[in-house]
Structures are given as C-alpha cells and as structure tokens.
Amino acid sequence: MTTSSRRFRPATSVAVFGCLLLSTAAVAQTYPIKPIRMVVAQSTGGNADFIARIFAQGLSDRLSQQIVVDNRAGGAGIIAAEMVARASPDGYTLLLAPTSFGINPALYPKLPYNPQRDFAPVSLLAASSAVIVVSPALQVKTVGELIAMAKAQPGKLHFGSSGIASANRLAGELFNSMANVNIVHVPYKGAPTAITDLVGGRIQVMFASPPSIMALVRSGKLRAIATAGTKRAAQLPDVPTVIESGLPGYQNTIWQALLVPARTPQAIISRLHKEIADIAKQPDVRERLLRDGSEAIASTPKELGEHLTDEISRWTKLVKSIGLKVD
Figure: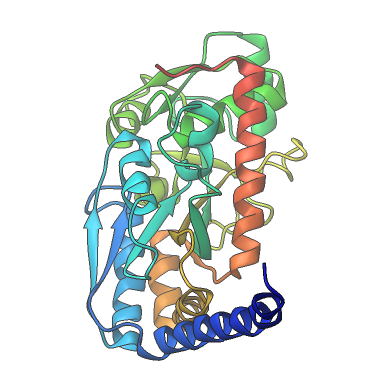
C-alpha cells in the first residue's frame, strides 16, 4: 500500500459513511411510497386478525398508504414468519407475530429462520391474560379447589387445547408443573371444538384467550376461576389472578407484536413505532380492544426485544422439563 492510498482511505470511508447516512435519511423522509403488507400468522376472523386490522387502519391513515392484511395461517405461525424473514428489509413487509412466535423455538429446533437474528422488533401491539375456565358441572370455584381436586384425583381431570403445540396447551402444562398436579391434556383441532366440549362437560378445564370465552362466561355456560396476568383483567374485575389465588409466579400472557425483517433501516422502525404508539393511545382503539378482551400496548423496540428473549427462554425451559416433543 502506498503512502497516498493510506492517506486518503479515511477520507473515502467518511464519504461512504456520509452517503449511507444521507441515503437512510432520504428513505425515512419518503417512506412509504407504496402499499405495505402486514402478514398475519392466523386466519381471518380470529383475535390476531382483529388486532391486525385495527392497527392496519390506523397506520394507513397516518402513513397515507394502504396497509394490506395478508393472512397466512398454518404451521403454528411458522409459514408467516418465514415469509417475512425472507422479505426485503425495506419496511414494506411487516409481521403481526402472535404468542406462538416465542414458543416455537422451544418446540421446533430446526426453524427455517432465527426468531431473534432474522427480525427487528417494532412494538408490542396488544396483550391479554389467559383465563382459566371450568365446566359449570365441575364443583370448583377457585384455583385452590382445582389444585386440591386434581391432587385427590390424579389423571382424572382433563384440559383441552387448540392443538398439541398450541399456546393454551403449554399454559396448561405450566400450571401442571408449578402446581405439581396431573390434569391430562386433550388436544383438539382448534379452540372452538375444545370450548364446545368444555361447555358440554366432556373436558373440565381450559386455559383460554378472553375473546374466545367471554360471552360464555357472561352467560354462565362457563365459569372463570382465575386470570393469568400480574393484575386482574379489566373485563373480569371480580376474578382473581392465579398469583392471588396461591400459585406465585404463574403468568400466561397472550400477545401480538409487530416485527420487520432484520436490517430494516432504523429510521423506518422508528417511524413505525411512533405511529403505533399514537394509535395505541386513541380512546376508540383502546375501547375496541378492551371489548374484545385485549389491552392496547405500545412498547419500545428494546422492550419488545427483551420480551421475546424472556418468552423464548421460559418456554424452552418448560418444554425441556416436561420432555415435550413435536414431530
């Protein structure tokens, strides 16, 4: 290397860096210039789809571009996540990631993407506390009574879920592990069928999402004995938390988050987060989500990243401890 080439390398590097900064700034100023696709890992009409459409409309209004909701159900959310992981990191493909996004790394060691390396967090959008519901035919009204019955009749009680690798299945296994009981898991092909059997008394317990059971609880067809958050649910203020009920540390939150492909410019992530935070503050948005059983949340990207790390860690520990394997 000549002296002259050494002399001018720093200036060249500064120039390149300056061009990159200008390019990023230009992207932030013009973004978006075309419709944005929000990929949803669940089917049309579900809770995730409902939340996606609320925020998609809000983003569309604020960004002056259409936000196309693209439902890609199946594969426990893996299909949707892989699609976004492989998309261009330009802010035009977003992922509405459900709770299963934090569970799948524990269940599927050979995912076609890395949940942390291949995505950049934007914000948590909404969350709700799972509800422990029982058949009215079951003579229990508290978590303490449920645990006592399960210990007195090991293997006799059954809890339903929407599938072998579902979030509500793991919620039940977490309860079994922490309460030291054996409530037998019964997998169904979807939550509606499980809930029908719960109402009919063919199974006794379910760890359900609020939107799926609120109407049945209000009508008396199901009994809510506890919620799984750190505080009581606004929709069920008279129902204690599992922690209040004597099982310290038990928590199961159902959440939806917004992610983008890794290497998406920070300026775009910041713009999306700013708009999401504004949408989440709107009274009509908060009211609509609350009626559906969810609470609007606008976390920072850093907070979402920490949340995902915690979720992956705790579900991995549980799956290893119970020896759960999914083919």
